Image 1 (cartoon, rainbow, N blue to C red):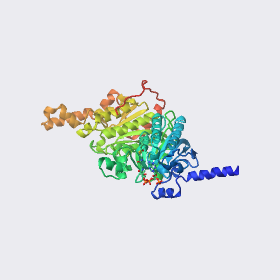
Image 2 (cartoon, rainbow, N blue to C red):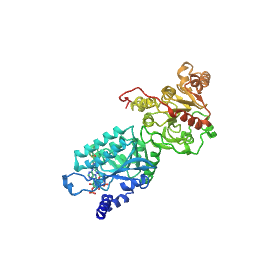
Image 3 (tube, helix red, strand yellow):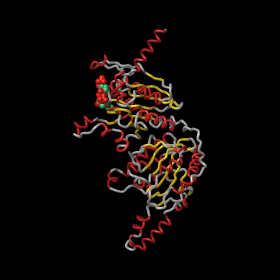
Image 4 (cartoon, rainbow, N blue to C red):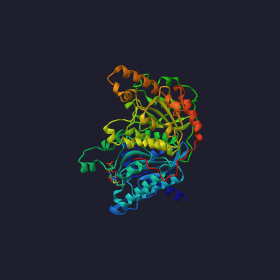
Length: 510
Ligand code: HXC
């Protein structure tokens, strides 16, 4: 028995070395960790249970039968993050560049199946060269099996992808169907076809970083939801995110102890909105003051900064925040902001995370660039997302809520549960200048009359009271009591029970 045990230990040690010390060193030299090192940092210490450590590929083409490596380029299994179960797979770049064979794909599929069956999140760590070229269609089939599982698990368990090296070809579409993608700056990149193919097909000369680096995907394409400076930071941030998320669509919202009573007024909020309605202020100040311990996990921080999305906690329970950002483009809604927020709202709704919306929006962005780019369709995504969402929805209008954007931003009419306004709110079809120029066009050359009309319009419409008179706003609240109001509303809505009519699925404008 002693020898049998020793043989197991020997085989395990060989498998744990992946592609060997030289390749591990090369990985470290590039500032990257190995697949197992990454899993160790991500999971609670000692909690990792590995599956399929001895799986090898079955390929015999191109002399492959002589190149079998235990594990076949991916490390899979499960463990815990602060005590809660998660499933994980990490591509091992030291083995065939982490490329995907039929056997490698089956390992990933097993983890996906187990995660879904056991209703636990699945995290994929990518550092790979795409389809194992020597395996041909067997690799393509393997990818499609993974994609199919991504889709079935979507909205049932959280799926997160972390890109920590190359992610090309077939490897990009599985992350693209997960809930969140995070990248590591300077060492990771994602693209369907790499610089060489780009050069051949379009004659463009571009580096991997320019084509699909973390900056491209967090700032321009919005494929990635965030980027970090190195592997360790990225993995620790993933633990923080996992802590915020329910383990499935039927699991309760995670709840932790909190130490900051929501009842305490914050009088600085009474001074947040400037006297001049055209002056910007930072809506993140408000979000941080509503979150417990000012702890806010922002999603897509560098993309469409005119809207802010992310998770925090109120009284220890997770909340999704959506807020127009007056600091950027005056908080206007454009195509990018609408898409960004729509996806976030839908994620929250899938996993029963209540949504708190802060509104200060002058409307939708006018112009040919926006209209040609499909603003109607993209704006409709956000409208659709809020309208279909059945989770608790709490809306606070801090200043402007103009035009269609008033409707879209979780208004009462879209089944907002609690809709508050600050006294500084201005709820109207449009701002005073635009309105007066249209309805009093005949007086346009008479400054005195225009001034009188403007004053009349401002007095009547640029306040929360017309909406409050109709019950579109449940109450006009003191800014300093916002955290208390939000916390109490969330408590009241804990047992909210609202179903949409049965359907196979909806048809959100894509
Ligand atoms: C088999 C691969 C491989 C692959 C890398 N390797 N990619 N083996 N299939 N797809 C192997 C290399 O041969 C090498 O083995 C080792 O992994 C490390 O690769 P290097 O090229 O030395 O590393 P590096 O210089 O860092 O470049 C990494 C890379 C490059 C950019 C990822 O390897 C690369 O371009 N690979 C091919 C990418 C690709 O075109 N994939 C197929 C996409 S098509 P040795 O033994 O020499 O160390 C696809 C279609 C699926 O995925 C579509 C489904 C929807």
